[in-house]
Image 1: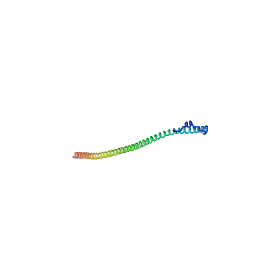
Image 2: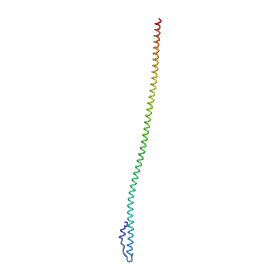
Image 3: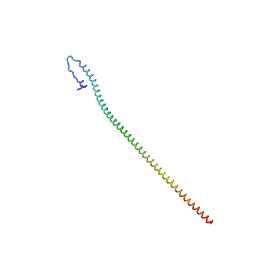
Image 4: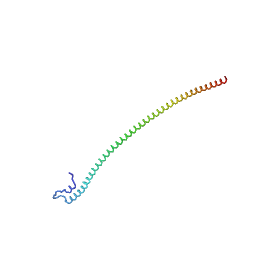
Length: 156
């Protein structure tokens, strides 16, 4: 069992015939009690402070672990967001390329349709010209023939 200041203060020594001076021993014991009491209180305070600091260390260790977990979670989330963004970007690019292909295909189809319409219209114009020319020639022949008959009738 540890020695306390009270134990020192209450210590009684047996008396002998030629022993020490009782007053000197009491004064010295009083000095020892004072110093020991100071050391005892300081030791007690240091133990309390040590206990409090241990609690703080545990608190900070817990906080550190929580912060590490949070950091890891944040890092994983950032990586997931980045991967998702890359996927979305790839999908957008792919959709844009498909849309561009559709637009180009539609434009090519329109160009082909317009060329076919142009060729058809060109053929119809040539056909119309040929028929109109034939009609004109027929009309001109009819006019010439009628003119010739009219001249013959007058002459004849």
